[in-house]
Length: 411
Image 1 (spheres, helix red, strand yellow):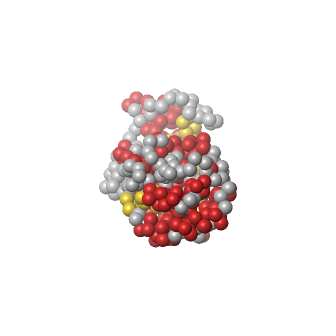
Image 2: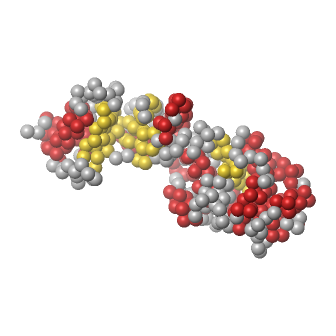
Image 3: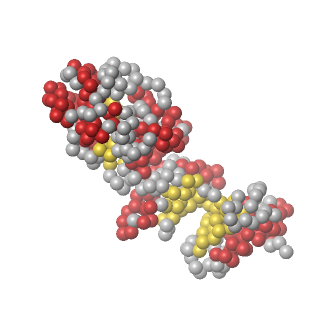
C-alpha cells in the first residue's frame, strides 16, 4: 500500500518540501591539508563569498566536516541554481549540488526526494550517507524507504548499477541534504593560498591557460601584457583585456598592466641582435616583468612556454631566458602539446578570444630565422649595448593598470 506522500504525489504531483533550497559544496584536496585545513577552508569560504557577492540579498556559508553549505535565506530555487553555477568557478570546489536542506525525519526526506524526481524518466538509485549516526534509520534502510516511495509514486525502475538518476541523501548534524546530480567544479586549491605571481599575457592561446592552471594551484595572479604600440594598433590590448575579464571569474580582483613595447623592440633590432632578437626581446620582457612583479609583491613569473613548441622555446633558449631574472619562472604548460592546450582554452572559454586577429608584438620586427641555441654570453653583450637595466626600468614605469572585472554578461 502506498505511503501518504507517495499516494499524494501520484494524484496531485509531488508533495511540498518542508525545507530550504541551498548549495552543498564538496571540497577536493583541501580536506587533505591536516593541521592547515582550517586556513584553507577559511580562505575558500572567503572566495566563495566574494564570487557570489550581489547575487542575493544575503548569503550564509556554513563550514562542516568535508563540505560547505551555502544558503541564501528567502531566495527561490532559480536564484539558488544561479548561485551554484557561479560557485563552480571558485578554485577548490569539486562539486556544487543544488540541494534541499530538510528536517531530520524520514518523512521530510521522502518528500524532498519525491519533489526532485517528479517528471523524470528512466532508472534511478538512492544513495544515503549518515554523518550523524543518531538518525533513526541506517543508510540502507533509508535507501529502501525512499526508493520504495519513488517507485510507488512514479513507477520508475530501480537500477543500482549505472542508473539514469541518483538521489543522494546526506544526514548531517542539524539537517538532511537531498539532491540529484551536481555541477562539476574546478578542483585545486583556493586562490591566494599559494602566494602571488605575475603572468606574462600575450594575445595567444597558451598564456591564458597557464594563468588558469596556476590559479588552480592557489596562486593569485596579476597580468602583464606587452603591446606593439606605437607601431601597432590597440587590438592586442583589447584582447588582453577581454582575456583577463574572462579569467577573472576564477579569482576576482584581477589587474592587467599594459606596457608599450614597440620602441624597445626597435632598439633591440638596431643593436645588431639579428637571429637573437626574439630571445633578446623576451629577456627584456622578463626583466621588466620582474620589476613589476616585485612592486606588486609577486614571488614568481608565469609564462605559457611549452617545450619545443616554437623556436624560442627550445631547451637552450629556455635556459637563456631563466638567466635573465632572479625570480622563478613557472611554466605550467611545459610538457603539453598544442591540442591539449587548445582543449583547456576551449573549456575555460578563452580560445575564441585568443583566436581573434591582432598584431602580435612578439612577431613585430622579428628576424626571418630565429636562433634555437642562444648563448647566454652573446645575449649579455647585446644587453650591455642596450643598457638593459635602464630600459627595463623605463618600461616598468610606463605600465598602465586596468581592472577588467568579470560579469555574468561578459560570458
